[in-house]
Image (cartoon, rainbow, N blue to C red; front, side, top):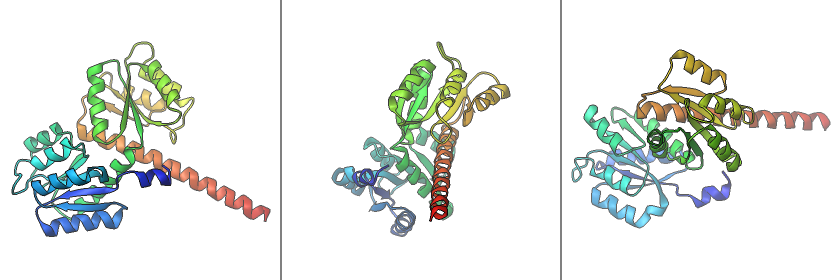
Length: 279
């Protein structure tokens, strides 16, 4: 990501929280650990006004689930309607709350139990920011299955492409010229299955260049082992939860980025050593 690109993208986070003290704590934590700026709204009405006036400057929102004037998550509905990736703060958690948040396609939710959750918020915002520059490819012959995975990746702010089989996927990866960084592939597909796709991709792209996550509802430990032996970074057995999928994919991307940074550091050390030896 170039310096010019960073200058051209939104860097502001909308914090919606009725408590002035809590909002200040959240905002200071975000601004202290990232390059993001924050803007605060204490009510649903204020949030709507800020979104209307500053939408192009906002890239994400941190939203309290229950406000005095929005007790049933209306603030979340507001941010999601504005296509703002949203991390929700909630003081209570049970199945009904979880289901409601997942139905709204929020990026994540955290429990307001302690200050420790703020680190999770910051980590989530940073990941959402970086994901917007990453193309992810979903490979599955089932349109319904592709839609499910596409929705999960979109919630995490990835740019999402689709392919119906391995052959289509290979062509799209080649056409992207290095822009596709994540491939999520099913196993059983016509023309070229997930195993063959994984093997073909690994002949051209190493793990610091392309992350591969295999998924399947068939088989057991052998399915996992074969995907991993053929070069996949991870494997998920269907059915999986939205939280598990998001966490595993994001962790896979984090690891890929870490490997890239380590490789860059090693290259810099080698250049420095060579320069020192020739001096």
